[in-house]
Length: 123
Image (cartoon, rainbow, N blue to C red; front, top):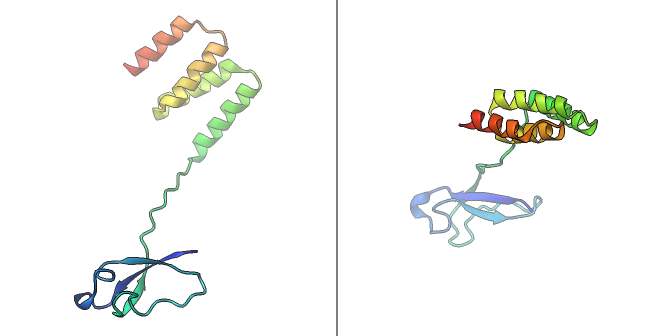
């Protein structure tokens, strides 16, 4: 059921409930409130400030991530590592950098060289 917000039309005569905005859980087919349930003061429904978080992935990032995954599934570790490494440098994504290092390791690169590479970039 949706939550509706109401406020007093005349706040000077409002009680503690309707002086500020208050929420009421109502079915969509329920009539809107005309008066405050606590004091009977006239109220109006107000538009809520919805604070939803939507995370969108840029198309390029999604495309590159898909390509890296395809390389990994095919066992093309050096290709996946190179693409992830290049992309992580460009956008500054530490998680992508770790993925690149893991793929370099799987491709058979020397772990000592990888550690030097990781330290020189992050220091």
